[in-house]
Length: 156
Image (tube, rainbow, N blue to C red):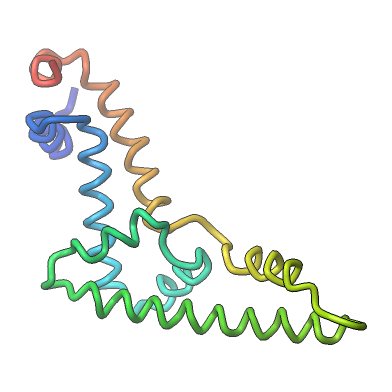
């Protein structure tokens, strides 16, 4: 079997305690967040994608402060957050305007909140989508390499 860079990264990961797949996924999460906050924060398609998902999931949001300060995660996060607040404001106004036109006596706040919530969340967290693809790839690699002697002894 052809041993590429990924094979040797996997071997290094096997030296760490815990699940090697989880370690790789966590590393991918951090690297992707780092890329988003530092390199791609001003990329319009990236920002639209984050807006469409209405931000990051709870887990990836809380990983942001742990990013290295060199990538200025607070600056990148504030840019994404301002986009999301702008989207929230526009959707709130559109929902309230729509309800005001249709109302006879009063607005159903519960119904307006449900409609607003469904409008906000378009897609899954972009980081989750990215690492899900990686996780599938790592599981396939693990299955491919588990019969190889050096890999199996490292895995044990």
